[in-house]
Image (spheres, helix red, strand yellow):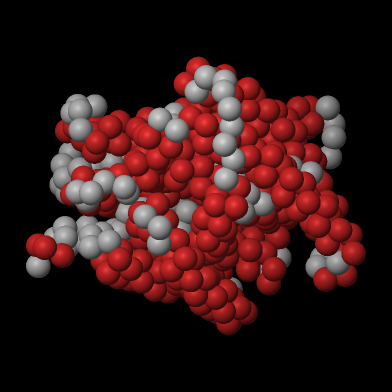
Length: 468
């Protein structure tokens, strides 16, 4: 799927349609009514959707402002480095932030508060340790490997690396909030507060006559990340103390790590996959080309946000239903999540394509050349939305190993296609490579869910094996 680096510099929006051609007004009525499991997931998704609608506007406008303030070249430097830091920070969790989403609902359902407390404490310590080590490695690589890439990236990479511990801790706190169904505490800090702070700090630097370039923007991003994550830490901790009273901790770190590492591979490959084109453009082309490509991807953010909102609303509910003897509720929720993802994505993609020239022109005069790329990238987004959050269902149902292998294979295909096609076709080559990889990924995920879980997670297919 193509939510790309848009996901990095504050990504994603979302919501849900439960029936194919149902109008949006009727959708809202359905989402706020009902008392069953699916209705609860719908309401969580609606909250996530509302947050990400707001964050989509904030993120888009903030990126426009950043591009205008810095110019295409410096904006391209900032984009490539910050995208890289978001990816490395997420990978520094080694999957533990998603393991919390898997285990915490199960422990809560069983009333096993000792393991809940142990999981939450171990998660924070684990990711802070691993991300701090990753910071040291990243800074060493930037310093000693400076001859491998352009000189204008060296200092920005070293500055950006300082944000890694807070990015990783923030992802862990987001996973903790998701596991409890707290959409605002999960999504608000990363998708609303952080982009606003980055922009505010950069505007302040400009007002104080500091040079407005990639280095300054990364300093602002690091400061914004620390403030955002520390604030989220306080809010989430207070909420946890209300729901889980103090008591003994039971830690099963080997078990949690054994599950988190395959999840790390799934999400690591997935995260790299959805950002591979931006990274490859940054590696093979100039920063101003990277800026144009990223702005095009960013313009599709409203479409990407649908997928992420639905995923935020259902992943922890998939985990809570995995142990059910009767799988009908799980299957029904999975099928509903496909409709919730596809139809809003299709509608939003159409609107973005119509408004594309205007939206891209807001970044600057040179950015209009990205408009034809929107059609290629939007096709991949809509196709991927047709199977909903399929990889979340696989991960939460214990199929993370095969899912990791799938994403690893698709990532290899994507990188190889980008390496072959970008030198020949430029930005069009990156978009086409991404589309081809998305087709492979969508078909493979559909087959996996069908064979492993027995659900037809495709919007135009009947529901289960028993329906054949």
